[in-house]
Amino acid sequence: MILAQALAAPETFVWSAFAPELLATAGALTLMLLAVAGRRRMLVALPVGAIAVALGAFLISRDLVAPGAVTVVFGAGVVALPIGLAAAPPMMHAAVAWWSALGSLVLTLWQAMGPMQYQDGALIATEAMGGSIAMDGIALFTRVTVYVTVLFVLPLGHAYLRDREIHRPEYEPLLLFSAVGMTLLGAANDLIILFVALEILSIALYVMCGMARRDRRSQEAAVKYFVMGAVASAILLYGMALIYVAVGSLDIPSIGLAVGLTSTPQRVVAIGLILTTVGLGFKVALVPFHAWTPDVYQGAPTNVTAFMAAGTKAAAFAVVLRLYLVSFGSLADYWVPVIAVLAAITMVYGAVVALVQHDVKRILAYSALAHAGYAAIGVASANRAGLSATLWYLLTYAIGTLAAFGVVLAIERSNRREVTLADLRGLGRTSPFLAGIFSIALLSLAGLPPTIGFVGKLTVFEAGLQADLAWLVVIGVISSVIAAFFYLRLMGMMFLEDPDESADEPLYAGGWGFAVNVAAILVLFLGIQPSFLLDLADASTILVR
Image (cartoon, rainbow, N blue to C red):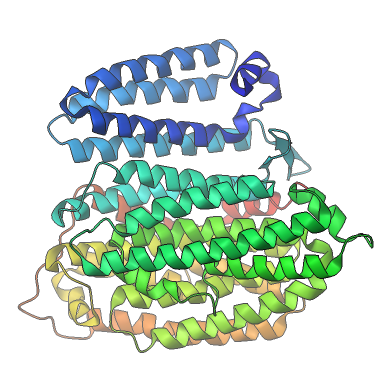
């Protein structure tokens, strides 16, 4: 019924509020049908392709040229890819998923240039679907970050899954479903959509973490993530229930209006805020709610870890920004000190504990904790500069961490076990290209020029200073210095130590090379020329209120 109304009145652009998610979901469902059909996949591909082409032609006839063209191209790809890659079903599944994610990213860019409106260089925030979906800067940047992450993760992980013999046809649909949950989480404008989106992304991740069924660490990671995630979701749901009891609304902007009223029971709101902070603290991995992170990052398949590190953090911080700045903006005097203290503890703890780790994935896990603390500086700033800086920082971190995990994937493909510091010895001599890519990624994560990570860290520190959080910025700088030590330690292992003659040569080729090369180029290019995305981040600071 909703779709019929949207098509009958396209000038309202109602459906466009979640057009990227529609395409990604269509891709996931198509992949599931292709997996069930097996060798008779054309019985699925032809009807789906025909429907997509017909729908695209209809949209073009209604002057919706861009989304119509994307739909037509998607339909053509659904037919062409199963034919061209019939001899390699895993590659065919990855290609269809990549095609879907690319179309979703194009639709996101179309949203930014079409349905979304600008005034005086700033994005005008609007609502859709009865106010349940927000079309604003948080939604836009979350979509860009998540779909870019998917476009990198699919080629990075394809050969890795094949070599470890853990590729299953449900992997790509789960990846797309999780991405849909992440992007909806960034666009959620009421608590129901927020919680449903959170569970969509979480359930898919639980399954993907346990994909290596013969690997005890993978099964342990899945169980730990599921149990702790379920507890955190229950706490979050209880907190949201108390907020609803206190204000009588599930709409995030309406909650913000009601929280400041004298008639609202402030004690109930305070308890709800505390429980919500605990639940969201788990999702963004702030200390002391971080216990799941090192074990899950280490045990999950590395491509899944890369996706979690980049995509989940962006989605979780998106909902943190929306809830705290919109719903709890009038309570900033209470939650800002709490977020600031959590950010300080997280930055220091992540950097210090990473110093004593020997497993590279575990080092990157504690590095992720420190970066969550840096991003939280933008949240604690509680101003437009902090919002812009956090959105930008999450994108910079995603690109840098994908490049780093891409190198770990290449090494793990050859030795078929966890990657330790010993595996990096002499890598600069045996595989200078791989060592160079890893060095670029590490410099970005350390926040050193001329990389994208330097610009990201600089923006959040500037936002903290504008919000009179100089003490927090000082702690952030100290944490960055500590973190730089273990990043440089990894580089020293690669370039200053003699290689192990018995070590296997890393395996990298094909899609892996494309993804990791593009990631490294973006790390450098956006570090030197960040102005376009920085301007977009500055224009994206108007939220639905």
